[in-house]
Image (cartoon, rainbow, N blue to C red; front, side, top):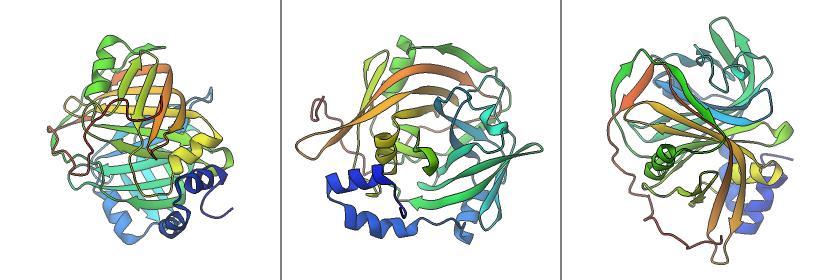
Length: 299
């Protein structure tokens, strides 16, 4: 099947970027290059996407002193620490064989690295055998500086089946979120979405929508959603370090003008303040962020 499965190929063909995607896809490899290993070792956090024991997809955030996540070989990373009890992925990150997608994103430099593979539990953490490793361009990444590490935190604060009014406001104010998707034997992927505040619409307490901005033409996320509509969203509140995690189903709507829009149906919500969380500065918005428009795509 090559670098892409049928879902990604279908979206690439529909959008008309198949040739470009094949060229860009050559950057995907199972090996961790020296520059990628050096980048990972400098990062104070790592986003991980996986399925919980019930099969729901989630994304969560691990933090630690730089070096807590590092390459230990040409195709393997080791991560010290884990998630607090109650986080929906705490169990998955302690189970051998979990398929995970990870993304290390540095708000200081607008750089990011993605690594997908299979997890093995280790004393005090876990390791991931890499199957796909690649970097992305800095589009739609907001620049931020770290302020402080907050050692204490109560962990999970709230669970529910739908967004509260306060959580709706947090989503509307967000300029960044992460999305975990999967495609069966093809594995799990974690990706980033960014834009100006308001780019994510709250249509109801159980439905969100956002535009799919032009990116690297690989369409790994949208391709996964063709094969499997499960998705997990992570909205970090950068200034406080709080996390809002959503699990549900997503689908892509294609407009006649070439624009794309993703609709997400919320099935479960977790809000928390993890111990060891990082607080970051207010953002310097990416110059690539489009202005926010309403009603410009198919609904």
